Image (cartoon, rainbow, N blue to C red; front, side):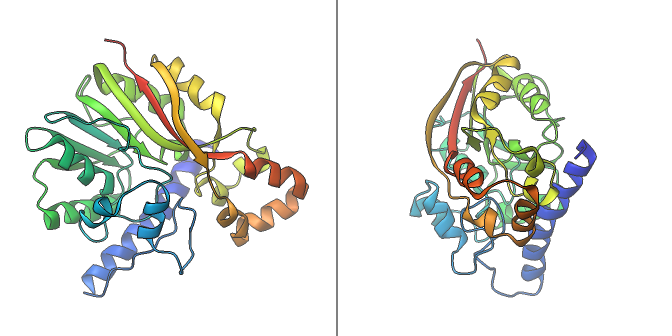
Length: 285
């Protein structure tokens, strides 16, 4: 897929999720606590977004402390768990969605700090802004923009966080270059994303449905991209096996795998090597 096709597929999928939430609020109906994102329970009506969040490292106090609907179950880890945010810092969230991680970060940096969420989907921005008003977050703002061309000045933030978003980019190398640009010297990057021990089969990478389901990137390639952007001390701080059953159970992806000619043994071996990773890096001071 080319870059335009990737951006269109991602915008349509996640825009529709946000639009559904906005419509439910307009109808004054109960907000659903489920989603179709990267979480291991993707599209499973029996598992809520709260269950997904607990499964990837969030505490009940995190889940209960944000506005209803901010947690959409779209992540694959908790990038804040090791971010060591401090009062007064400025934090940027790449692909902020409904604002879940932004609101948690806002509590940590306090009134003297600030949090900026960037998302390329207008409906997500509207949803996040409504959540911010509902929760009374005066130190959080949301900006419409692409993470490959961040709407921020040079050296504007102290910390960058992101949760299962960089792999959705058509140009992850540019995302990391932009991240490096907006970080202040000595700034920190802490992201959660999916990585794999083996290369992702090309037939899967070229499929839009599979791509927007948060496909992993081979671990060494992911880390090398950060180093090439200028980051130092690049490391996987923590990782755990990530359940991929929801991908294989997706009808479109299942059909793709069936047509791909890949054996069940190859598919299973690749699936066992998929990890949810917390990745840290520093901008030299």
